Amino acid sequence: MTRHFLRDDDLTPAEQRQVLELALRLKAERFAERPLAGPRAVAILFDKPTLRTQLSFTVGVAELGGHPMVVDGNLAQIGVRESVEDTAGVLGRQVAAVVWRTFHQSRLETMARHAGVPVVNALTDQFHPCQALADLLTIAEHAGGLDALRGRTLAYVGDGANNMAHSYLLAGATAGMHVRVGTPTSRRPDADVVDRAATVAAGTGGSVTVLHDAAAAVSGAHAVATDTWVSMGDATGAAEAEQLFGPFRLDAALLGRAEPDAVVLHCMPAYRGKEIAAEVIDGPRSVVFDEAENRLHVQKAVLTWLLERS
Ligand code: CP
Image (cartoon, rainbow, N blue to C red):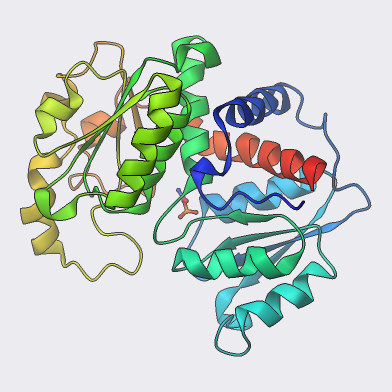
């Protein structure tokens, strides 16, 4: 059976742990795994802008011995020039895996059904699971190891309806963390995702909570994360975003509610003075560049893990 990584809960708690352990090993020994030796190609498709994801998948596929084929979505026009199904059928005959950043999750699911090779979510409107895995690895590194994830509190403040909120809920629950989302009432996460994360958390000893008060969400947290107030493709204007999310800005006062050694996460690109204060993202508790680097290590682990099982 071909395995895919389309959303965070595609990995069981035990599988997520295996991938994170492999990521740590690949971080220590960059060229320890060569599943793409040949070189076999990986199609890396982008229907939305990117820096970190293109960089980390391109470097990662090369380090795994493969050939990264980066395709600008404007060129391929998947779903316009030809269907997702036909695109998947063509790609699957020639590449070892498909990595895709696109719009609705259903496009990715269609790709996975028809490609015949592992498909990896490089961000959709609903989920960003590679980023959440990198964030878990980063929290663990700063907390003393993977065992330290279980029971820790991860607070996310900002847009609760975006892909990062959804991925933090699912990935954090899978890791046995207590995940809190602090967001305006009009931007609650998808109810299905909250329910699914609660079910996962019931089996791992974690929990999920959605709050509408930023201070309550961050109080006593071991890791505090935020994200841009206006996600790619979101029509929310700057003034509207400021009014809606201003009370959830991650500034020094809000961070002061967290544990004294709490780490600060942001998947970047970041907008200083908007969702995060410069003194916080550029301050001593910020681990955002570790987080960006860890995209490389977790994605190499995901690809290696999927290829071994498919
Ligand atoms: N965090 C993240 O996915 O970055 P890019 O949008 O630059 O790829």
